Length: 287
Image (tube, rainbow, N blue to C red; front, side):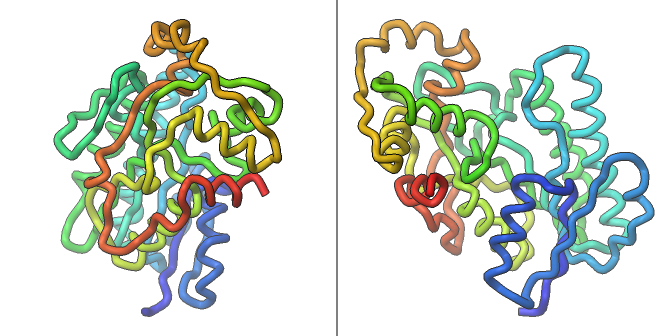
């Protein structure tokens, strides 16, 4: 395989940083650079030497403040399309965009399975800005410009942000935790990094839904985290009658105990990227 030149937009991003580390296992095969796309300076950068641009720059799901709405569209949608246009004009062959499962809306109290025919229905401007970015860059696709859109579920791993660190905290300090039946698609950062490597290696285009091999039950995940830290946590069903009606209404409860999964069929790929199961991924993350 000839050497691949990769540009990652968004300096110091969680996904980008981990991908760089992951690709270091194949010395000489991947040349990677990061680029901040804040301001206007990036437009002076010549993209012509890059085979693939991985666009991870964007505003994460941190605010529901209506004052932020315009900024979300400016960064997550308009900037994405602008970077893709610049890449295409400079002869880059592949543009990979990190979208999100959030384009399908929030998790729910009932089992919720997303397949290829599920129509995206964002429930907030974060999800909508991602979806509109996807639609904008798809229009740029052509014979010499491949567009790969990745819609990962919740990404977790060492130093990840979001809900995973909160679950770790809970597992370390709580003697008990709700024994609640839910199912979530999740994606360990190493599984995502390997998936992105294969996307670049195989010069893919299209829409992709990577996830861990097994679905995650939040209670079980907390139990595994506790065990890795040498703790025993008791799972109790006593809280369930309080939690169930809160799903769909209380954001934090929804995020932790809601249901949101991809049909496993849409996440299979011709090469194996699901290299860590849940137990192993938590061991790697927590140790």
